[in-house]
Length: 170
Length: 170
DNA sequence: GCAACTAGTTGCAAAACGCAACTGGTTTTT
DNA sequence: AAAAACCAGTTGCGTTTTGCAACTAGTTGC
Image (cartoon, rainbow over all chains, first blue to last red; front, side, top):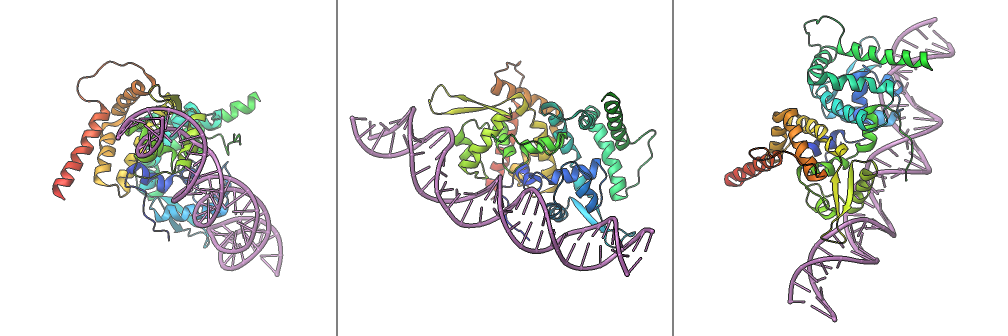
């Protein structure tokens, strides 16, 4: 229940007050690019090893902020399903830009950088297509099937290809 | 001297480890949009009221990370001038996307939102032009004069217009 | 019934943050 | 020349946030 007031009404500042910490955007990243939807998945299936109390806290505030929602999994009474809202889906361009910047200036590994590069090359058009896919999986919005693989599949395949090449080499 | 290792080599994670706090990007924002170049300017001329120790710390790490540089002001022995590097200038698209997201989903004030809106409408083309202007002021890169006002001037004028209308109304 | 799995919660130590006062130097004013 | 104002931070200290590890409590599969 922290109803403290913002430091200013600047768009960038307000965005930082919602997402400006070291974990929130990583959770969104895992939901978007890794299709993580349950607490345990978010807790264990990512490289950075978030602690459970931090994860619980961030999920709570992201729900409060309208970035994600929590619903019950019909197949398991205790499981919750976290979904992106439209507001959450529209963080994709933010992540894409951060990703492009990171891959350009920071020591990103080859296998993790390939997705960033592909996403940067694809540009706003690819992002829009990806966002449409996310609207389908997270919001149930039906869309016309496109020929060929989805953006999510393309990114995944590129990652696997680099990994295969890497292990073949190493 | 914190040489601790990153949580992962993911582009988004590495970017967050550099910029993922509530102040760093606000400093960059003020340098880009407010043309703040000195410690005192950054300290006092922004709405959010950063404390001097936090500002000193962030400036130090931003220099270490290669996002900004510090040089001496020839007109004043004690004054330092902070400048964006190319790496820093290329944070503009990140800020622009965050700004666009914020103005769409958060309670941004009218006078502060107008710049966000203009920047979003201008799109990547306007961003590129703005970045060229920043390369001139921060890196000394000469560019061909364009007809009409600069992007910085346009944004400033839009802000002043809203403010004028607001005070006339109120 | 029991092991494994689910979503968190709790306790506590360490780190980061934020305020206010202060340092040491420089420039401007009178 | 002395005083006032300005400059870039630093220091001390209390508060808040973070991070680790262990733990609770309910659910499912065998």
